[in-house]
Image (cartoon, rainbow, N blue to C red):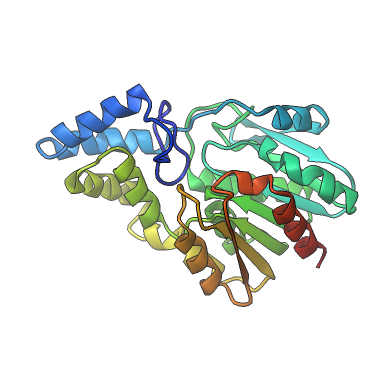
Length: 293
């Protein structure tokens, strides 16, 4: 979760990318003022936590969306953009924080060619769905509503934060027969720590942020949204893929998710990072073969 201006998805900022000027300014404010004004800076961090950012859409994503069947799902007065390709059992793609539904682009051809219907959405505040903020619970409600409207969902493929959302949605009633999670975070504590590191947030400010989140969503928040906890209650076949060079969500996060999931298979990739893993032909073949069973 991040500022609307920072170049960050879920996890740490890549050391290979220069920090945006706005982010450098925020880091300076948090590091200098946080120790003396933790409550004030904690309230600011709380507002930033829910903010989303739309990154430029790659050409492949734009092309995929042009060839998709478009629909809109109304959820609590939010017109959620829904895309689909092909015919057959539904495979639902779940993007991560500051991602978009068109990130399913590389999966569309191999899955539709194998006889599946690919469905993808733009979560609130992402892609073509309006807004500039959202919550995990709102994103999970979107998945449950899409599954009810477009389903039954045979398989789901998630990326990054989308894995945490999917695990929560499934723990609370969404039915999926096969699951692929790519680069999932294991728990909210990791996301809070990464967010704190991104903004150079002192420990006292980080504590205020967590306290405000727990006040809003109750004290059991950390446990309720934990990917590790939620997948531990699932028994569907699962494949967890994670790259050893992922600089946003470290490999150990995916390993923890797979270890907690009875019967899940874990696959480590190399040299693909956090995003290229969604476009790698060998990885895509593995995903499609797993979905086919």
